[in-house]
Image (cartoon, rainbow, N blue to C red):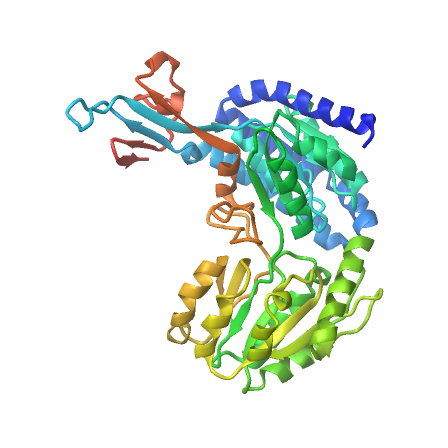
Length: 471
């Protein structure tokens, strides 16, 4: 590691920390206006941004334009979150000398942590990158951000950072560093208070090791890998399942964390035949980076050594969508290896004869971001719900996991290895909570209380007062 890399990281973090002092003191309503200005700036500069990303990632124009719009929408969502005020979780318990033990005046709310380190993702050059959800939610919380750009789209990262900085009151609120070697000094900088990451299991575990080496380990919110099991029950329609699955499997050449990697289908009913036909009509395409391409070829090659190929699409740029087949017993015997993520357009179709045999196998799967059921009615699926609820952070009925809505109710997380903190989400309004910490004030002078905790509630935020929520 060169001194130049270390110096660049230190400078970015220290500038962000200095800029963050004024930012955390900025009233939420003013921060909301800034976030909306960032959204406007991203849309205004879309004609500069998408061509750079297309050149670096080979993603199509329509996809990139849509992603820029989604990225802007994330900033607008967090502007709404700030104006709503519920994110601070203001709680007031007035004193009660008659309680056992006597209760003092206690008031609690969430405050921003400090500098947040964000590792940009490869597969979303905008929505999970420099201006992605981690950055938007951290800025909303009152935290400055330093992003480690992904090596797959460095120029896009620079352009995006430039656009966002123009809309910020202090450009140092968003730092940007490049290169693999920048990761360690960024994670271990003493002023960094939390880390956000979207990437591979290997990358996430490496970051966790760096955090564990710190004298003061900090929170790590990582999204590391997911196989997103789909359970097809006998009442579902084979044609509809097959067409939906093939489209979801090959969307973006399978380079989504929500790609359906395991599909459990009845042994009878024509499901395998329908899937084989639908996948056979698909085609591959260029992958985002050479590293991702090599990883997909290795992982799909390992599956080919163990399982027969049910169907394959047309090869494009050396990439072929492939679906492998196994019966439930053979799949169970091959766990946990057969349930490892294969990042790309590859999946395993697992045939079962009795749906009653599924829970025992599903319980052995690793945690996932999503789990899906396809069925004509709820009664048929009732016994699976408790199992899937423990397996994944988002449960889908008669749909497909690719596509993550940016809204208040979204949860994008799940048990390990889907994420390092299953109670937290990296998409949606609740993701702001990752970058906050609660502080309680006991018998604190009213003049020194944050406005969110005052009895007159000048900001009009939701408050839980003496156990009752006031909106």
